[in-house]
Length: 374
Image (tube, rainbow, N blue to C red):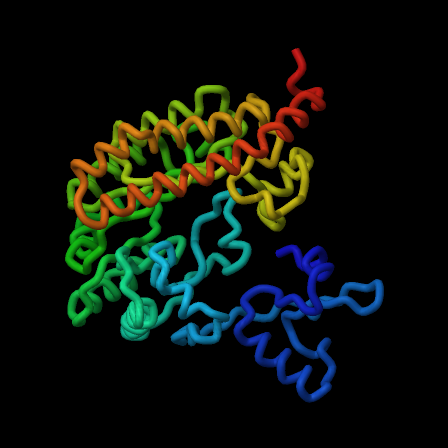
């Protein structure tokens, strides 16, 4: 999505989905054929950046990836923080301004066959558990919106139920799945323990500003119904929207605790090149050091300074993952749920340390900006 900059750091960049382009590129390099005849490749030719154009996305994605091709991945797979993963479909029919998914995979949902997905699940579990004694035996269906094609989702869940696979699963979802009782029951029967919900905001104004079709009331109703079906809810949150002010951290933490959200990921708003929000907000970026786009504040919010917003994130994390709540988790949670909370307690502690390390820089940035004077 930002190939001109990427070309500064490597010889060739694959534009879009690369599994077909890379085979043709390798063939061209091996046979000393012209690379500019391969669709979906960008590279430098002297001072010029050459892009051979976007190639059509692959229609057939019924392929089980060979995980052994990833360098040392088999060894890494023994870590409890590395879960087995399977991607079942590509594309999303929605149009949230900040999301890069549609810009990368398109709005049309392309899907794998249910049996191919189940075969991949079985292979992925075997790959991650082979030669390893992992405490956190969890597989993550990594689709950003697995339920965009309801028919496929139901077929896959029923195929898992009918298989001999007995495992723990987690999955990402929009709030709408919380209104689908049939789907929630199938998730439970298939072995899913939790739904990682892209809640993002807690204010209707923010949902409207970024064209996410949901409301605070929608989110609450969804969370409550998912939990009624015996599934945990993990919350994925964004702070730093145009309407966010001091106190956003407390509001987020209080929501998580009040509604028994099992775990959280808190990201500061950032703007990916190619998305609508990048075009409207790119002049608000503090810098373009993409290595810092990992939760740190990287823009000038409208109603709160970068320094104060970073402190809000730290405060929310500390409140959610307090020593008191850690002790409660150890005493009252069981099995995988307890293990995950304990692990996330220490992970969030590490994340807060990294966020604190950037506070002096963000304080200086804030003081130098005319936006927050007086």
